[in-house]
Length: 125
Image (cartoon, rainbow, N blue to C red; front, side):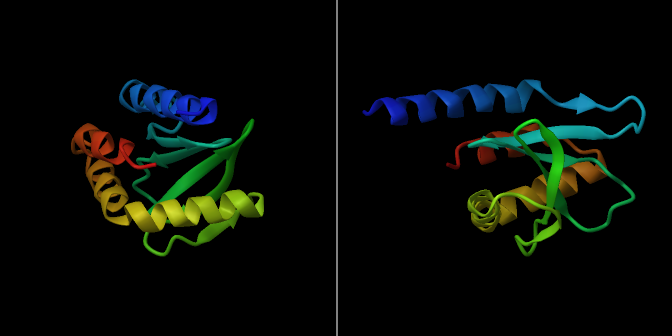
């Protein structure tokens, strides 16, 4: 296995641990923030936002939080911007994982357990 592949696998394993231990609750807004995946220089997150009916994800890029938002159903960017290569990566990832991510969105918005769903999602690369 090449060093790059070993590094990618190690990063994926660390991400899986983060996915299970990093949920945070914002004190000011009272919403839950869940890390779905770490890909390249991005964090893909989903929030428990009861006032947002459109299923979507948020992208942190580098040190920039909330760089972009994407519709889970269409995979299209609905707000913000990312470099083109990352934009395509997020859209492709959403298309591959749409069903699982929609299940996570629905569970999180309803206040139901979402951790088992995230574990299933973590295996995708």
